[in-house]
Image (cartoon, rainbow, N blue to C red):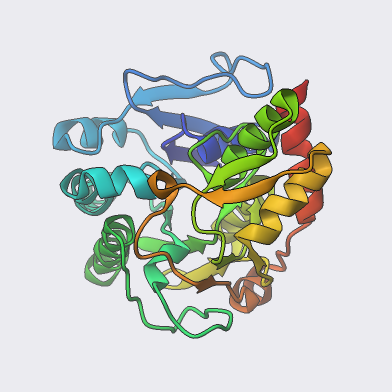
Length: 316
């Protein structure tokens, strides 16, 4: 299968490209021109994939990136950091919402010009649910974003599904819950905790700065999320939205203490005002029944395995 991956130079994109190549697919990696595609696991991919530049803010660039025929497109490119989106909400909307609209329109035009009819997996975020009852979210729950990032991702979903309704472009929406894994770095919560706790162990510190530790989150391994994307490409239904979730929650304080135990350091968190963000969602856990019924997917990696792999990656 010919697959184009936008945001192929990102944390998830690199994992997905590697998995697609290993599965024998013909991959086009669309990357920001200044970044290119880093190697994955020490293997250079230059001889196994095609790379194309992609700036979502440039319509000509988007259309050029989509000039070749594709069987599938996975749209990962985005302003992916809540903090970065908060610093410049307008830019987040330009890339996440307007960029998605531009990409979908270019896909419709490319399909009209040629024989390809790609399945398009648009990757959104569980953050679009916003605050709600303390129970697992299902796809029919209201979308009530409460951050610039979440709002821009909700806008991207609207743009993608509008394209499906208008043209029958085969769009599927994925809403992954928080995911992490080896290769992810700060400011994301797990690598940030690991970095600070390792520094505390090395310096014999007993107090570690953190943000708000009360929120409860559904946490997945990026490798499981990539498997869910592959499953949706083969078995997802156009026009549908699917949660990608473990279905279990852990508070950030519990997460902090579990990482400290793995590292072997006795440390206590203390709140740092610079690390606390307003509008935190108190409870964000997903129900992935719909995905499981459609594809058979379920997480293969435990949270402890993910955390141990990440600590090992930062200490060896």
